[in-house]
Image (cartoon, rainbow, N blue to C red; front, side, top):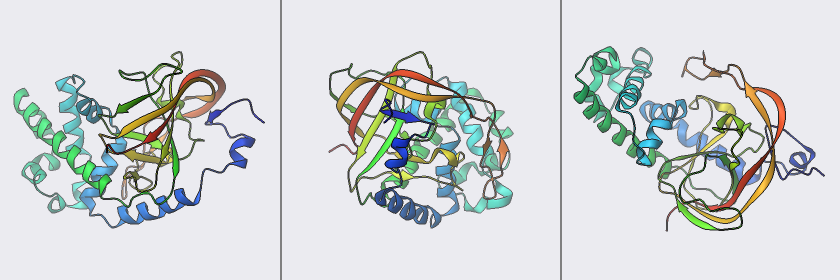
Length: 287
């Protein structure tokens, strides 16, 4: 038996003996791929755009001061990444439709006065967040218990080792159902001993399993939790986590329905051991 309680990016005999593809996970993926497949093109774009990069949206939700230039840049990407030629301008619904000229040419948005860009980008981000939250909450609920995994940096409200806490989540949370996904790519600093999460999800929970073709990085096997979720931390301890350091370039999913384009790659490198603060928590909706 391995001495490692948690291994990601590295398969061991423990993982082989305890497969991650449980019946509940299998049903989750099947029902959510059907759900997403039946959505209109715009709703699929809303989901895909989140997987392209969620930092700006989640800082906004967490009420962390956001550089307005970065907020403008987020709006520019939101306009420019929608493929008008492939999907058509008429598939853009209200209230986004009023900005259709920017979907056709995002340069027009960049030429607007700074305060106007701020007004439009704030409206877009608020509307986008509400749309994505609705799509998550309307997805089929979990039918059986599943376990999700994620890493994060330390943030206010998290307990020290040996303590417990109930922590409300302001932003969305990206997790994975597969502990073999190399989560080291999401660690802000390999020298900081925080944080690895093991989340127990009860039947009847609202979340969204995302996969190709609406996931820019389908190898992450992402499950998205709604904002306002609650992590009921039942155990916090320092654990040895074995990971593979990652470097290089990768491909992202960008059509059709999104064109494949090279962005960065997380090549598996040397295996290292980290002492990490590990949280075991129940999740998700606030009662």
